[in-house]
Image (tube, rainbow, N blue to C red; front, side, top):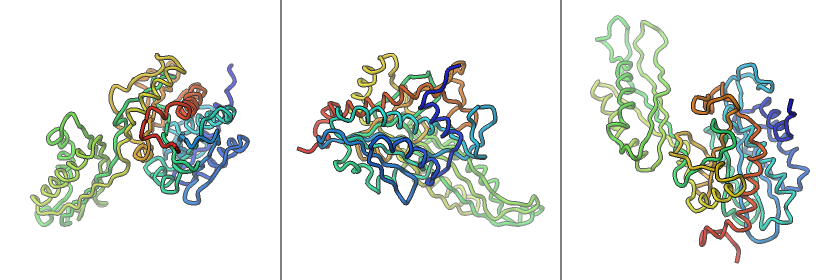
Length: 400
């Protein structure tokens, strides 16, 4: 039996003790214990359980950022895994436990080579990735300037089902924007035995679901797609009462501002018109959760070549198409040239194409990828500080 490596031990401890949201006191304390011996400058927020670490290299005026998210999901993990969650209703079902362990590993590697670093490395340990915008808060608190000079690039790795040890990415839109469509259809309540004396919003809500489902095919450019998926419908409590109103919600995923604007105008207009046609009203709002995650073309081309040199060209591949999942690393990528890689982590015997996806209680990741994950992050930081920044030309943030 092979004993787990130190990074695997850390990941499994984190997996046993997941925490949700913006406030993760136990998780933060555990990561702090790992970073404290490395002579890294650590700072903490009062708004959320984040950790920002700065590793000082040679004073070149350059800095680079590496990011890991920390929060778990409100998912009940089934029994069976040796290190399964010990907290009911919470599970690291999106791999954030691996992300933290991998970044700790990168910090160890870089700390051991600090005398060779041509600048500073900022480590961004971020809670609240799962729809709470933790990255946005950390940006407002100044994480990009934590080292003094503004970081010139940012890199992240996200595990997913896939061929174990393969790093995937692409230039341009890489992960979708995430948005909430909320609809409240207001009719007129009444007795279930006398529908002619009321205006029942439930059949109209059923029509609204059909409108949402068909909108993408009817009204959007197929080469600039969106997904609109109804996920919530609530109405009534008593079987013999026609409710006054119905609430609907859908998740909307997009890759361009133009398509999202079309949803926000044309689909909203259709839903409001549908309600009016039945003598009712519809209150429709479209809320933006996360923007599209856009990988910088130049930084990504450089990063792919760097990892191919480190791991071998067969271990680095281009994503065939963008991913409809979303990431609040998007906020970082809006501010500085950035690249996020997906890392395949399916265990032996699991077919990646049919494996349970991220966010499923059945998802399983092989933490044997952690050493390569740590090495990749460290190589990207060290390489960018030494030479990668030159690829960005005038966009490189370098003091004269």
